[in-house]
Image (cartoon, rainbow over all chains, first blue to last red):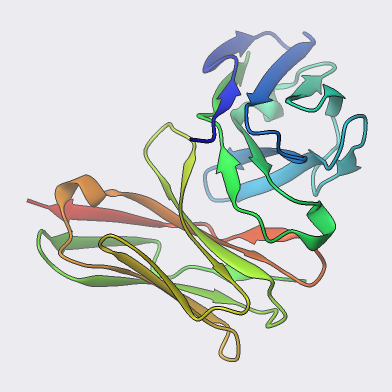
Length: 116
Length: 111
């Protein structure tokens, strides 16, 4: 079974703190994604990566950055957390090059971040 | 711009009922459509993936169909059970290579 593991299920941080959300997948997938999910807004893509050291902005990249130094790991970084970044963060991965993607998307369990 | 709509937002049915969840999309040049299940506070679990060249996919009591010409996909759940209670989301991969999610249908199956 494909496994996408997010390191923290629940985090509580203070405004201005730097926050790291880690995601690891064990199926050698090329593509990895970070979404946030908010009530009434659904899932919104923050960033995605189709290869090591490659990244592309999604729909809402402001206030976030990402790092992909190894194929299996994709990190989301909040440089200076703000209260409007309180949300559920979901990592996902899929097979095949993104531009010709017919692969299935697999999600982690999610990281619930609260910024006080 | 691809838009994916799931109506209604919530549905409550008695146990044992067969039901259909609807998903509509605006970009008919869709590459694939995927159905997910999400339990409260959890991530999304993939249920079925339909490629653009396919008309339907089946897994156990679940059957998903895709009609690109009408911009619709349906998820059919046979003999519903209380354990099927969850939020069901569809997502379509459009011609712009972007995956667009619907906001989901929250299903409650009453014992």
